[in-house]
Length: 285
Image (cartoon, rainbow, N blue to C red; front, side):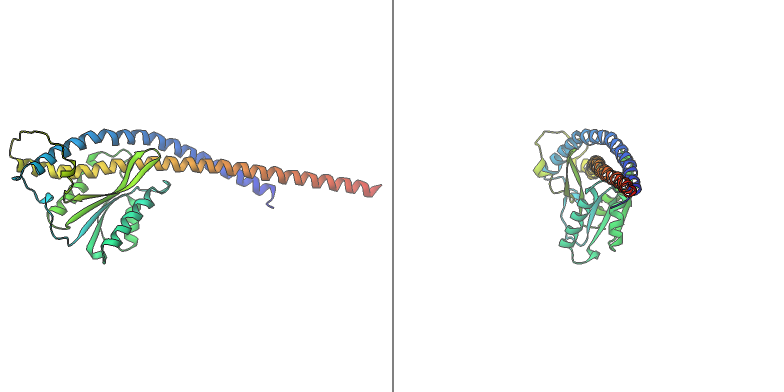
């Protein structure tokens, strides 16, 4: 059995750890509230721009754009959205596992695909496995603005336009609620799911539909990336809040168990001392 001093030291260190995890839980809860509001407030914009783009792209046989057309797939790109640090439960591992398994299933060689990493954890994972990371960004704020990812989003769309890759998938955690965020794969380019989400609305266009598509389609693709990032951030703060709460609860349980062990050891030590005193007194009689 461990000595009283050892048990007391473990109780003290566990209490300090629980204070840290409790503080991290409170910080994540504060960040989560803002991230959830950001993710939800972006939805109406996404729905409206998708409606307009779909009406132009699907509703007119004259309108066309390279981002809408299939072409032979020689190389595939994957946007993988993770966090810059851990302590977020299974948030990072789930999305990385899903993306990595999809890559292994679809491709026979690492030359057939590349990764666009948003987040340090994902980037480090793929670099360690010798997978090409063509673009990366790390150090995003907890409440990222579009300006922070504009360059990488623009570069991603341009790489598809100039033929660097022929299709683009995006892997991220879709925020559902504080206790649920689903690992999601979305085919970003070419834009093939517009017809399924098309709400028929009458629009008058000025200038021509093709000129509007030329501007709107890249913006729409960039908005999809930003929307997924907002979803990911809300999921990250939610996952970290939950992970820190579980860590705090586990620390409290461990403290209770150690306190019980400490009291038992202390009681045993006192009993032994009393027994020794009684035995010594009996020997003197």
